[in-house]
Amino acid sequence: MRTFEKGVPGAAPRRPLPPFGDEHEQLRASIRRFVERELRPHAERWEDERWFPDEVFAKLAAGGFLGLKYPEAYGGQGGDHLHDAVLIEELGGCGSGGVAAGIGAHVTIATPPVFKFGTEEQKRRFLVPAIRGERIAALGITEPGAGSDVAAIRTRAEPVDGGWVVNGSKTFITGGVRADFVVTAVKTTADGGHGGLSFLLIERGMEGFTVSRKLEKLGWHASDTAELAFADVFVPEENLLGRENEGFYLIMANFQWERIAMALGAVAAMGRLVDSSLAYARERVAFGRPIGRFQAIRHKIAAMAVKHEAARALTYHALRRFHSGADAIDEVTQAKLLSQRYACEVADDAIQVHGGAGYMREYGVERAARDLRLGPIGGGTDEVMKEILGRRLGL
Image (cartoon, rainbow, N blue to C red; front, side, top):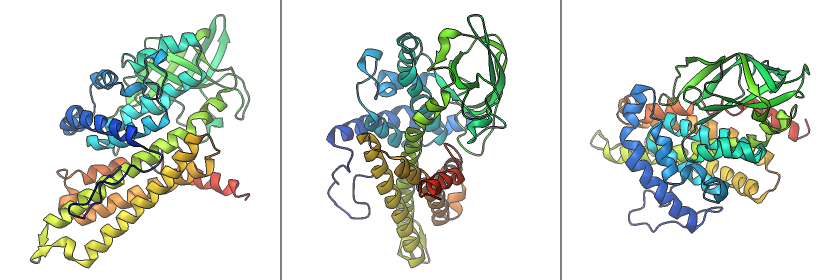
């Protein structure tokens, strides 16, 4: 979140925007120092290596950042989703969407189901070491033939004495290469609809569980994205997460937070792109004056700033409703839809403002454009968001 009026020399700091307060700004400053010290200096190398080290999770845990919203009884900080929201916004400053995504997958989508639906024993076995950065988690839902249509999941779990035998595959799993355990959606009945879905905690080292391959992507280069294969994997009954055949409720329970997180990340990225474009427009001289003095550039950046503020207003509105416990499906869906598309447009405009420099790696805007392009796809495509909103309107 930008806390100063940009473009106005000597402007006073802005007050934190609700739902954030002074406590959140103190946390923001702490996370920002961590990002500047531990992440940003290495982002370029990690992008080139297509990987960031597992020790990043241990360092985050040492700062208390992996358990911000979890109770102290499990090693967390006793906070709530607003504290996690600050983390999501600030991680975008690390200079690598892949690093932010790799950390975010563990914090935002993989550990929440364990906390919400896990037994006490499961929380001790999986959540506590995840908060300590000792075990890395991934969420395994998407399959080669099942993305937004979760009813099409084909990975099967057949009941046997003491548990289940799992066969099938998953794809596009963020963190799947390095994950110590995967919160995995499986079919436990022959039901062809949303019924019969269950979740199993499948652990690295279980016989028959393999990482088929590490996938190469347009963006998010520093994150690991995997195809996973399950060939007669025995999963003990104590690894059933939540109730059998009620996994669809587990999927839906975290969708709103996942989509808010994506919107927060996109809004933060847009703010940084506006700032970098402003700085470049002031420094780059063409035809004897800074390019920001040309109406075409001024108007382009002005439009970028409007998109950023509009997306932030809608996202913060959705966050406020979600945090209050109100029905926020409409607002969250709208925020996810608007922020992701606007982020792609702002990134493209930032490249144009930077001209040839924007096409080069040096300024980072080309990387932002590549990283942000997943937004209208992941966590529910633009088309799915529009379908949800259309139905909510009674159509």
